[in-house]
Image (tube, rainbow, N blue to C red; front, side):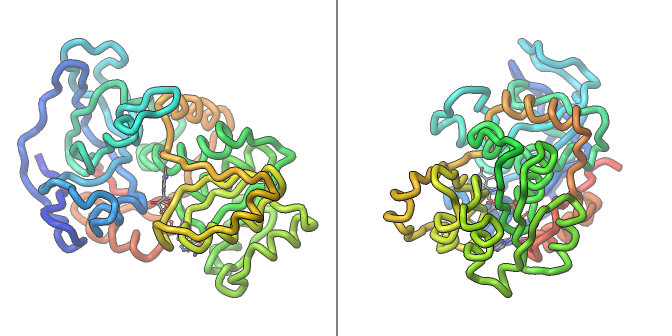
Length: 336
Ligand SMILES: NC(=O)c1ccc[n+]([C@@H]2O[C@H](COP(=O)([O-])OP(=O)(O)OC[C@H]3O[C@@H](n4cnc5c(N)ncnc54)[C@H](OP(=O)(O)O)[C@@H]3O)[C@@H](O)[C@H]2O)c1
């Protein structure tokens, strides 16, 4: 079968290889991959910052939808023909995660989904909602669940809350759609006025251009009558975390998700202490939460925002788009 593999660190080392089709072992299923979606973490992987010990060659990409074509021994959750999506943390089923449960991710410790076929434990899969196309379903798992798990499960999102979303990438736009669906007030930041207009069309209550307002936290305070926001999805990291602490209300929660601007942060401890602020590290979420999210998405018929769709042969250009900063999700159609 054909698979896009990383043969060394560096985007230029993504190559299309012919490799043997995998066979499902006990507890595993064989999936014919339909579509996959990219995440910023795929860039971190080929840049060598996500896992400096990555073994080569490694098939790339974690998020996928596909059809089950055969079952290994001792499987019971699915039947041949079921359409399934992958869960990012393949071993985290429910409850608090152990370090090992958040480690086993596709395209990293185990082979990824940018291939014609994928073998995976049946416990790392959920049924894809029938109202979504393959391209839309592929976009859901990592970014959707990260936003859902942060806002709804850990943040107990309600319609009285105000949520701040940073930028217009995958996680943040899912955050916007989820918060809007649950009736919350939303503030979206972006480097681009044009993207902010598109965020408004998706339901954003307020918008801030973080290029023209680098001290965006002051704008957020003004927009909330100096009360601060209830929740922040902190996807930027680095010095941005200090700004997020200034932007929250007392007892507000910052979900620490991304590291676009740095893996380390110096933070204003006194401000955090005075506000009883909550900083919570997030590692996507367990399969049980993915299934909860999919049920809610089906109920409100939430459609992921797709920035662009590429063919399997043209996968390189999808990764070029990831470097540019997409509005929503980038999809690669593996089987057309
Ligand atoms: N911990 C977890 O479980 C988890 C899960 C998923 C993702 N992540 C992390 O979260 C981050 C975002 O991932 P993603 O896949 O959503 O990325 P993405 O789709 O590639 O989106 C990136 C977006 O970030 C925005 N951005 C860049 N610099 C910014 C800044 N200084 N302030 C505000 N926004 C900025 C840009 O939006 P504009 O173009 O609108 O400015 C850009 O389009 C990454 O670091 C990723 O590794 C972590």
